[in-house]
Length: 170
Image (tube, rainbow, N blue to C red; front, side, top):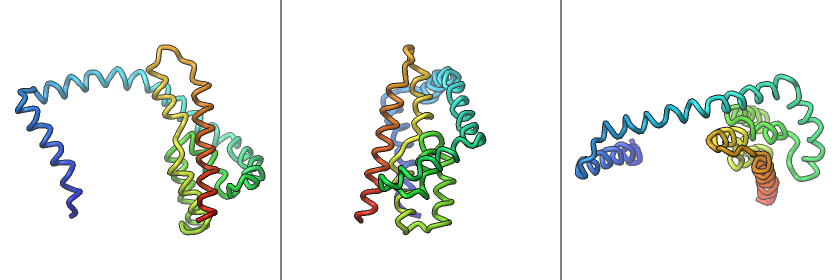
């Protein structure tokens, strides 16, 4: 067992000891924090459910495959391997779905291949934009996320372009 395995328990105990020294009622504070989390979970849940349903519909309807085939030539011209098109399209929607696609790419092309390296960079540098947006915008009173989501998607795509370029150079 490495020393890093002891860090989290040590931090946990240090926080409890610090709270005891300052005479903070740890259990009551923890229960109070949980009480505040329940309304947050209830307010975020519908937005997360919508994102999950839309992700499933995107895959099940065939729109994902059609979009992948349509965009593969453009991706290829931009230096993005066509084999990772599905990952590029799915990553903004689903982290677990894109992890499965990444595993398929590794199985087909290998993790050390150019395609595998590009897929790794795309997976690691991107964000599940729609999931994060659902969580973030569920708590805002003024809901106008379209501009923010477009900026996040553009930044995500730029990271794909730069990541594939770096993989090509290295």
